[in-house]
Amino acid sequence: MSDFSSKDSTSPVRRRTGVDPISAVKVPERLTEAVDAWAEAHRLTRSDAICKLIELGLKMVLPDSAPAHPIASDAIGIEEIAVHEIESLLDPALPADERERRIRRLTEGPPEFSHERIDLPKQRP
Image 1 (cartoon, one colour):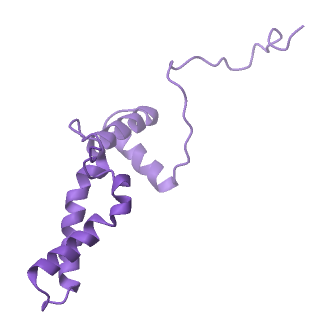
Image 2 (cartoon, rainbow, N blue to C red):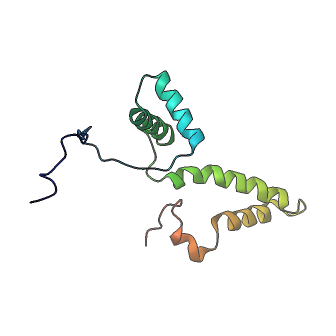
């Protein structure tokens, strides 16, 4: 006889709470307390609160109009910062065309690696 058929009638019966998979995560006690307070304020269970907070967080991080490649969208801002920093390091006595050449060389990188850059348009052969 199997162990499953000889259940003790006094043992608690587990009921199914949903069809979604269960995910276990380690959460610091301070964060758990904050989630519980948020859940209570919104009259939710801890599980529902965690789901809602994750959804809210993902909406903030991943807007609907997310670019095809997030690194490519940040590349322009990063390049502007790099150009500013490079300009501050270059000798002010250099001619303008030499300054531009050096900045372009440093921001675009060596031509050997240009095919690896994801933020630049691909060159047609």
